[in-house]
Picture 1 (cartoon, one colour):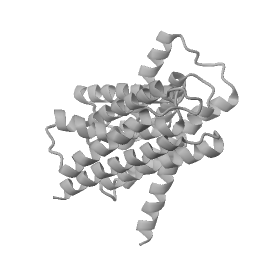
Picture 2 (cartoon, one colour):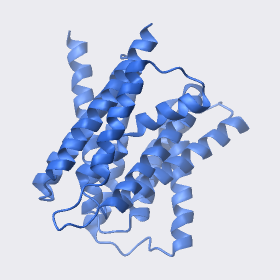
Picture 3 (cartoon, one colour):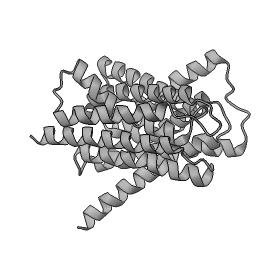
Picture 4 (cartoon, one colour):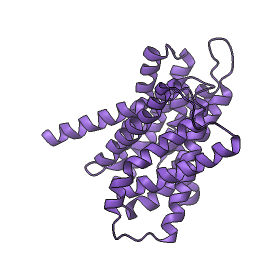
Length: 291
């Protein structure tokens, strides 16, 4: 019983930590690519000593390095697209749309891995996509369209889905810290290259923004995502994944109190429909795995 309470506490804390991401990004006064770069760089540096200890005597194969680089590229694109979307749309819309990544994992698995979905999974997909369309075409308080930012968030979800599919092959082969170092480090290299191409600054930020960089690396990345990874040792992946549904709610509540950003009625309705659809897909997947 005590162990179950501990797991529940860790999961709730992990989702709460992940929910801070969007607000921390908004508070950082730097270009999205730069925010993403320092988030990945500081997270990789955190895992460096642990990875050196775990990877002692372990020889990486070329295939593993290629998968790590591919996953790093997809993770870099995810953060670049999603963080940029937060400049053009609301926190609620951005987080809900980027949370649709399980739907894209589902579709890519059907197309490329020949996985057979259940009727409930197809129903969930249709429901979630209907809600996503509603959120995508929501207009702001001034009548301006948030379409560009919403499409960027969807692009970030697709990139994250590709990252998960690559990581699914690589993660079982490597210890957690080493895997995190390779993927976060690879993403930082890709983002650094893009920053150089675009001529963006890497310094000159105020101390508060540097604090946001560190907070993004430690709170939603190291503390948040690793809490879910820890829980995977004790719970099925599908059950742990369902907890991600709490992220849009947590991020939206934080946006209301910290950024004074209240979701529009259609935006809130579309968000609920989308999250319910995602839940149906996860539930269908859980039943399929059990069968």
